[in-house]
Length: 167
Image 1 (cartoon, rainbow, N blue to C red):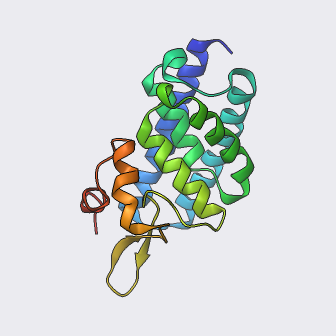
Image 2 (cartoon, helix red, strand yellow; image 1 turned 135 degrees about the vertical axis):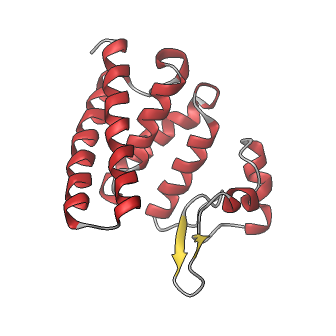
């Protein structure tokens, strides 16, 4: 696949990924929509793995910021069963921090930690508190220093992040 073909494929996959998630958000967990999302995620998983196999990390310098972000979202929406691939991609992100969107690194790092059964570092992974009806961060390692860690990546404070989450 050429770079332009990769960019086009990633954009199309990203649009499908987001459209079904917005539809689910609007209509609720209707089984037909959940099945459709699963089918889209399976197709996107195959696509991103093939692109990665051929091109490696989808960096800003090689593919542009949009394509780098599109690839990130496809990886971020992978299932726990894809943890090995997510870890491999995250490892390359860590080695190329100047060539990827920082917020995406923070999000994937937390997702990988949570999927691994470990406390997250940045507080980006949330769970619905059934008592309060509000989203709250899943366990955070050393929570008193979470904002200092977030500041290093320019992603704002945890409090600012949580204020943006609709409850």
